[in-house]
Length: 348
Image 1 (tube, rainbow, N blue to C red):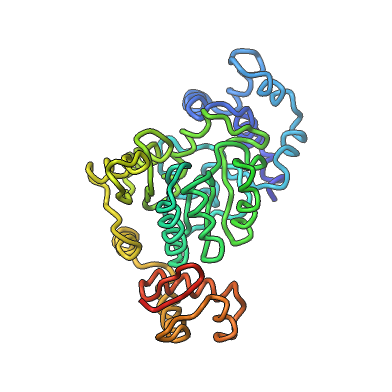
Image 2: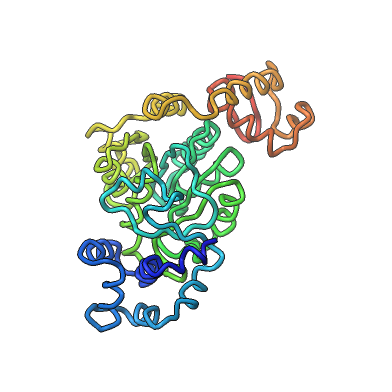
């Protein structure tokens, strides 16, 4: 029980510090110099410069503090549920607020610009679907553009984790509220180091990108300008020793310049989805769903026949519900033996 575990004084102090909504660097500095109880005592004695909201959190009773995180999981460094890949980082957050379940399988980050092109959206959708169908959960930021396209594609194919730049009760952008719920319903999670109620202020997003990289075993960048969150995530990936993949683009397009520079400086170029899946398999090992993917390829390949079929025809042919058919098609497409265009499935 989350409430019972949080009654421990040391854990309550750590939770209270997390709920102050300070910059992650400041939290890390404070906890490196003092234990959590001392930090809380110093704050209450006015020895720390705090916002009005943070001062109000210090005045909450323990019961009020726990009530503020009701309906979610609070995962602290050292807990069994705390992701091991994140725990290994020197700048790992002490506390994570979670809705849903963080997968234990190796994850792949897919990130990119909010102002993506049709090309970028198409690649992000195909990549997200293929990665999730292979059994690797997709990690991203739930932002508009590439992030949203990749995570939307995972909903029917597999698991996903969305790392937010605000509280998990304040989905940003608001139009992705339903997508966040879908991610949770499909076995994934929405995660933040910021407490409930935290606004998605601009300064909160650069630090959250280290969590996206930290949770992943590899990072894929699809369309990115020179400046922006995607390149910050890529920088963290290099610092964390994560394999870095980038999708090349037109040399005169601003949203491709960041990816092209990453490739110039050593990132693995993604030539197509098959190439990406091969590269990920080399870095992460065989896909968790390799056997299922092989079966899916055979079943779908036979069902579409030489002339192809529309997706709407497959449930009746396979005697399966549409949701299960979509998963099978995702596996088969990831294998490279079929293509899906405007809902029409054909052998490659």
